[in-house]
Image 1 (cartoon, rainbow, N blue to C red):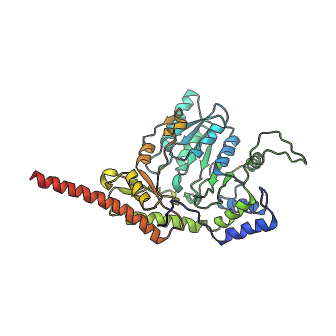
Image 2: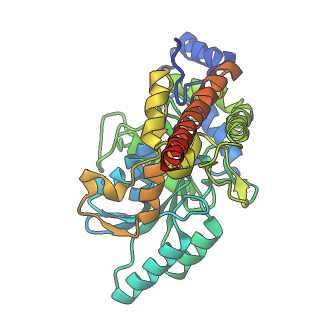
Length: 392
């Protein structure tokens, strides 16, 4: 039985063409024409803003926080319902993450909680240095409300759009409204460079500073001269070639991911207790992953029981992100709320979402989900009928 993966890479012909060019011209290191072309093409996607291609989205967050001046002893607000890479760079800088709960409408960071937290911290003289806003699973956070809250107290936003290339907020690609935006091209993302990331900024001087730090902070002299601590964070010209080809088909990949999610939604329409992640009205949700929320009582099975049934059929599923405030590594971190994120983690499931998933493969997934729902419901009905018969 062929395994169905959660989110597999989807490569085409142009990627290979650009990679072959890199090999043919011997531009295989962290400089070369593919990097420059990839940055230019990506800039066109984000309103012409300066872009810096890096080795990972995590590296981009790290350099973004450095540009914002985050340092030892600072507090940084961060979405709690996200992958650890959103918050780890806060710790790299010696700062403290403060995790903020999600709202039900989008599953992203709750703008009301952010506003309340900033007001309380302003009164206490403890404003955070920044807010990291994650656009979760391809859905934009409500940027208008978050920006309004942060502007009152001059707290800058860093947009973590690692999962949200192709996601729109009020008609625009996310990651370009805040002073800094971050994207990921990890192997499971909507487009990939196998591993890589992009830092987007509204400040050209910041882009040059990030590029300088990312190349070990080497001074422009003939020998190796360093006045600052730098990092080995630049993307290679080979991987940038993959990115160029992938970016050319982004809209096709978005359309395929959205189609996957809506086919699932329609296939489960008559199954009680399973609901697609909300689609916020203010933007385009790419549905990078097709994420559903289970009501165990209505569906007849728990999230983990459904995962086990999928695994038995060689189908990869995954829980929604475990909230960062519940992670052992961040056990001592401050948090604001958390009950919503905890509930989404307990009941949320990610189903296979690859843009190259075949209709036959998706039918396999659908059949398992429907079988689990039908089996549990039928068993419950049979038990009730048996109890009723014995009682009479």
